[in-house]
Length: 232
Image (tube, rainbow, N blue to C red):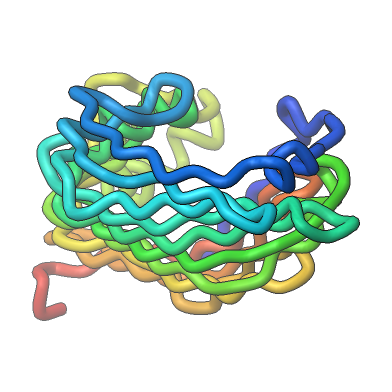
């Protein structure tokens, strides 16, 4: 079968971006912090150096503790031109997916160990224009985890009953997997994947999808199938 999903905008607002103040700064700042991050997401302890010169601010985060795993990142913000520009290269290894996704996106349906690599750059005078300009690539892999709220094998085995009663998420149900992953190409603010893959003891799933980073919408098609074992 094929499942489709479409998530509408959630907080896809716009705000001006002005990095021109960086043109007047020339500094090298050593940072030693118990925690460094944004919103509810933090890494640490971290020792790093912020360098600001010629309108550009650059920060490199060496391998640091992050949700039970590690994170390494290089970030830059360029205010030297007419249009503010950003660049991010980040690698996460072995992080606990459930608390990270909860803190980052208030999402609590996925657990496991997370490995991801992201390399993106863009420019824009507003947050939406910046998101629309993003180019790069990303990959993500969850290991030894589970999808919470649904047992796909049970759903397949009870299709008739579900057609009568309707499907309702059950917090006590899970679809366990050995690996869930995908790679994305990112262009003009659209992240696309053709290789979504889930391997589990009873379920296999492949799929494709696209994420509009500017509008913050998601379209995905999944093709699950039931197998007798991991070798099925």
